[in-house]
Image (cartoon, rainbow, N blue to C red; front, side, top):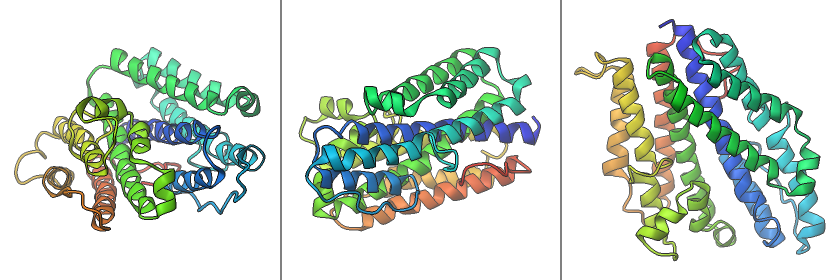
Length: 325
């Protein structure tokens, strides 16, 4: 497989995953607009932007009248993450870059996959954000998530399990590991502030990750910090848990490079083994101190290193327009 083709599929996977991450956080925040105090909504926007690595957002409101103060701010803040071309991490920008990746490997993409990817981009390009907002703030974001689910289903049904599929999936899960580590670290850091702890509950974190119902079935509707973090760190059956992602990365690398998976391990395989050990054995007993945040920040750094080692081992060039690793 040509290195440039591997790079395009890898970055396609990363861009698609970045779209979903942004959409999930936006849906969480926009669903709260109607019934949360202005101060809580302000903290929520600060958290969303920090998790996404965006420039810090100042205090958007201090007035209790969320209808007249926070809603206009929310429109601007959400629009920046949905349709702002100047923002490289907006839904539109990531979809556009993912489509460009797909265009460059059009010959290797099954027609249904390309059609779904292209239609998703054309839809968001032509969407009227203001009209969608007038119907309901989360309307456009919810449709974006539905289109991503459709894309994932088409990929699963139409793509052969060859190198192209493996590099696309590898990009998705490397992106997911990094994002989930940032998400968990940021939630812990915000939770150290009493005001933010009320605005960003552990139940909210589970909802962002699509794990709230599973938690309720296994534990109770009363969400406890230790159990929530444990579920999102070590549970191999939760699609957005760290262990789930790391396990899939390990399997994908072993299929891409079977020789590198044997001792002495190739650098990417060594790093993913280190990540696996950290998640399974070093993950905190989840105490109340700042060590947890440091633990997840270290996983974020390890995820970046894994990206760099993977690119160095299997790809001879990187996309100049790629998202930051």
